[in-house]
Length: 152
Picture 1 (cartoon, one colour):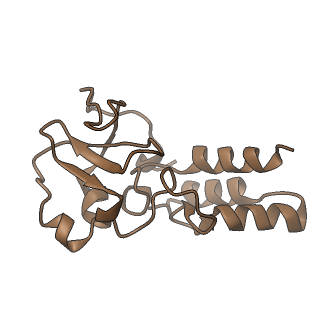
Picture 2 (picture 1 turned 135 degrees about the horizontal axis):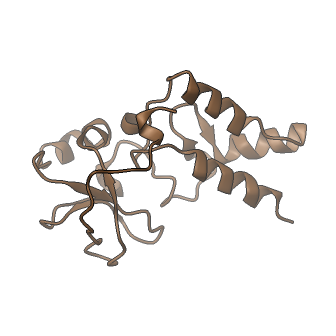
C-alpha cells in the first residue's frame, strides 16, 4: 500500500484540540494546502505541525499546538467525520459516499468498495494525502459504514 495508508508517523508529539481536548492525528502540510479554501490557505503557517480532529460534534478540523485552527467552513469539501449527510464522501479518492455504499449493498446484497479501493491503493492510484481531509487512507471509515449498514 502507498505511504498515505501507512499508520506510522515520525511526528510523535501529542496535541489536543483546543475546543474538546481530544488528541489529534498528525496530517501532512500538503493535506491542508490541498483542501483549505483560498482565504484559509492565506492564514496557514506552513512551518507549524497540524493535527486532524475527528470529533463529530467539534467544528475544528485542523489545529496546531500554537493555537491555529481551521474549521469545517475553511475547507473546500465536507468532512466525513463531521457531516452525516448521505452524499458526503467516505472515500475521497474514488467517490464512495454513504449513499453509494448503501445503494450498492441494497441492489446487489454485497459491497465491492473494500476490494475496489484496496486494488486501487495497491496499484498506487490513491491520493489520500491530498483528497481525504484526515490525510490518510479511508478504508477504516469505509469498513465502519459498511458494517453499520449491515446492522438490523
